[in-house]
Image (tube, rainbow, N blue to C red; front, side, top):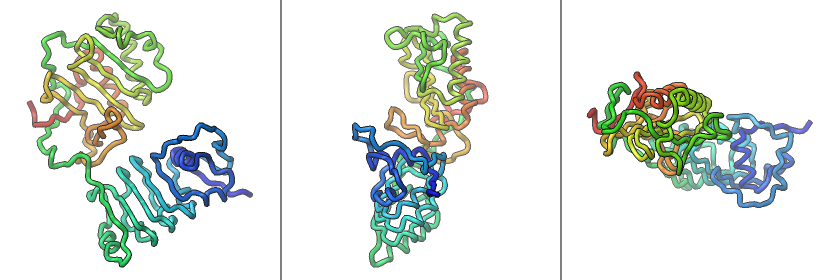
Length: 330
């Protein structure tokens, strides 16, 4: 019976991009010497990408990495694997690059006799850091780099937690949503397909009937809860240029911001009390550039949906929702 391997779909995608194809027989795994999770697929061909039956997709299973006997270079970025024990099997690794991951156990590095270079997450995340001193004391010690955090806790010491009902917009106009834009994954919800946007978006929400607003608010809230939303802006201004609640999403995460004034002093981020540091980042990158700390993002999609629906229908933040305000309370 031919050996079978279970593999996370993301890992399978990395392998296909790095090999410009997919291993067709188990011995093809021996050809993989370099693996970079950010490798772009430049091939225009679709040949050789078929996934054979002996590779079975299983979410969260990265053990196949330990079955690559000739792997010398491994770079994994912005991914949480949970279990990194497969590294002990990667005996030929020379370079191990792990920026913004959940790798923590430095003891695994002692299992890599040929290691020449290792780049690790920030110090505060690492366990058994004494291992790094052991490695540095070796006659042929690897070059050890420890990632500097994108944000530092000492720069965000003056932050206050504020309840949604205690935050009020500093806006001279009507305190109700007037302009809305939203992007979805896949098909738009039924009533959003004909919703005016872009050059037709002036007062697009204000011009709806109360019944239409209720339907669209419910559809957007359901899409948020089902993780079908890419981003949104809900604004009190006619063209959506300010005084808004906005959000961006990644699998399992929702980052929401509220801009209540014309200045930065009225800016609030949603607060996740399960995290006490800004140095631990979630997968969301605002505009594809600025990462978001887990402390500023929600894992509770039901709560995110509640906040969105309430704001659409009232122009106010949901009672009981928690927000962070830099500079202390206003």
